[in-house]
Length: 319
Image (cartoon, rainbow, N blue to C red; front, top):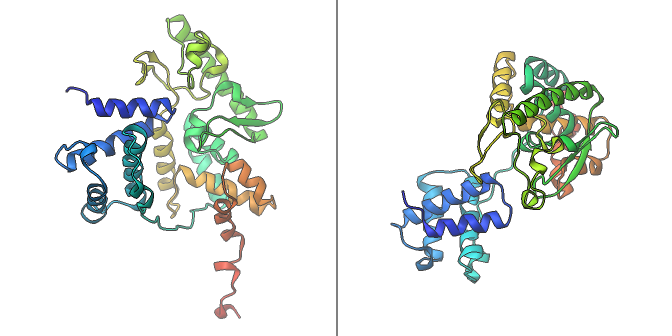
């Protein structure tokens, strides 16, 4: 199938800005759907009516969630503003769908302990790291050897959400487990080197600046994949990080086995981390920094569980 020159321009514009592969795939998907929806018309020939019609179709006919509609809009805005360089005033007035406000799912300490004890192997260790540090799933999986500081008991999270670095706590109880994991990762890396591989993808243009850095131990993933695969950017055979679906599936299955009647996901561990810290009396600003929230209002969603019952109100039935 021939490549679309327009979509190639979109890919180049995304990669120049160092967006993630996920974002690239998502934007390409929605831009392609937008064009196909309008019978393959070129976006230069379309404008506000066509964008509104597409977004309305997603909401009314496809019944997509508000977050999905906003994702499609972000992709189209990127196309017009960053690729086609269309300075259309009406783009600034496009209204994004309002996402519903949900109270985060929180596990009790006992439920958290039961869940972590139920998950074996690498997935279990990753789950413990997620709960013990408050990291997002992909932040944990992309963790490099050099970013785990055992001496200062901290983990440096590189290029987190918003492309920002931050520091979070390294729990003492995970030190020995992580040392053993690094021993396993090093054995895998040494085997890869012996077989003529052992190079990982480096962020941004570091590979061009330091051609041999990708084979250095400090740049390897803490949680390497079980097998090598083709890098979608370079086409080289490399060992990526642990597959994300493995962790999600392990948590989902453990929740089912334990009979925990809550909608538990990987992100629930991050929610529980924040809530349990606040319960322990830590300042909300400290928790905000550990989570990497831009606005403290985002962190305040966890304060709801600190009250007794709904908003701290004592029901009249209890009087």
